[in-house]
Image (cartoon, rainbow, N blue to C red):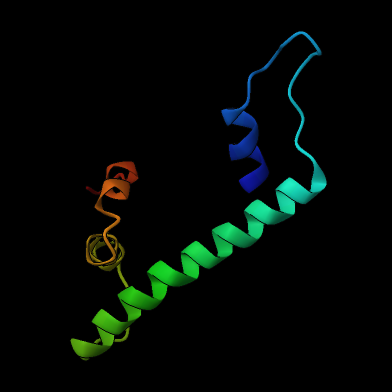
Length: 80
């Protein structure tokens, strides 16, 4: 989940104990992640439609990253 990913990015301990995440931060990140997914998926869907296909593949998502100037995200893909 998004919360799990956020927790992994925070230090486990500090002078005041483990870092915490406020509810509004969780909600904000969830909205941002949702928007990011929609943005990339929409680009991939446009490419698929131009090719007269009906299924968005992982390769389409990776190509959408490139088209949108987000090619650096490809390194997080197991298929790249």
